[in-house]
Image 1 (cartoon, protein in one colour):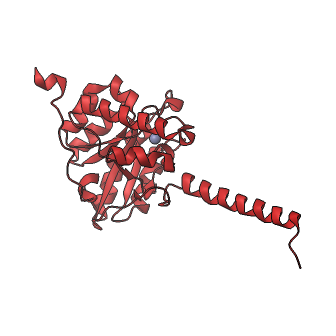
Image 2: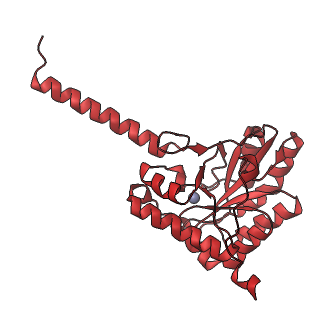
Length: 255
Ligand SMILES: [Zn+2]
């Protein structure tokens, strides 16, 4: 039976819908590797890597850093560039404490996933410049807001030699959730090799919220995972990456 125009049109519509669904799944699913490779696990099966997003925040980031220092735990902080500009000393302190600094865009715009290649280049370059100015070295890792990856990020990532780090387990600590629930979720669900995501900061759209529950949960998370025999390693170590090269002394260090 010959295919009529209507049938051909229906096939075209179905193909377009399928392509759209495939495309959306690869943009919005944080674990997708279609457009860009993203690490979700580290190579050390006896360890986990803690990561904190959306800082630096003047209250919650020092609280998290204090707990990490007291319990001798390294972490990675995926920083929002405009907050780095507001908090250069805090950014420098994180680097000085041995934590990994990552790029988490300039302003964490929720619609940024629809931005052009040029938009993404500006978001990443501006943030890496701010991190380098504050801490003396640029970020080597990038985490897209909400984990949304598009092919338009790829060119900028390559130009800046940035690798994408996603996560295997997250705390959902940007939603209303108690410290006990965060500690229970991470404490019970973490597996060796996991990259774990928490939040020490507040993206611009939630700037009036609080991450106090994350700060309160952190000692219990660390205790529970150590009780299960897991170690904590830095994300760069876990991914077998070298430390970021220093490009210049921070302004204060020069004086
Ligand atoms: Zn974020």
